[in-house]
Image 1 (cartoon, rainbow, N blue to C red):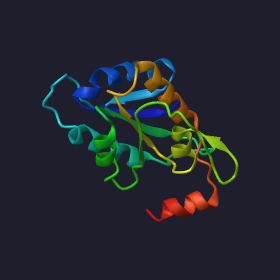
Image 2: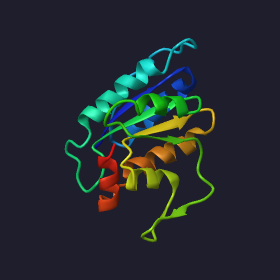
Image 3: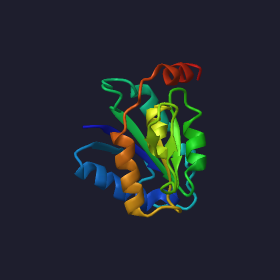
Length: 165
């Protein structure tokens, strides 16, 4: 069971609530850090910042086999601003998702990875930022599933690069 923190803004409000329900049904612990009411004047840094702080503060605790023990899912219109806000927190590594990629990459070791798999395997991303205006619920749900299931490779070049952050 993973501990997953959720945050967003008005543009991601409905998708956030649906994804919280989805991860709870999958047996994970989900925490809603807001917004708790739909307000078109809200500001995502007010919610995303505390989410990133919790994920960064708890990251690595009980992590095993490269899998996440704590993760963040942040949701806004494009996911870009949310990721920028989250990535200002030391230890937070947010990757943006705004639709399934039409291509995969082959890494230096010959492994074929999607964008989400690459963000986890190579960059040890601990927060997934979703662009709610670019994806359906089904796409977002699948992205979250892949994100949570993909381990960090732990390969030396990736660990070395992350240490430079």
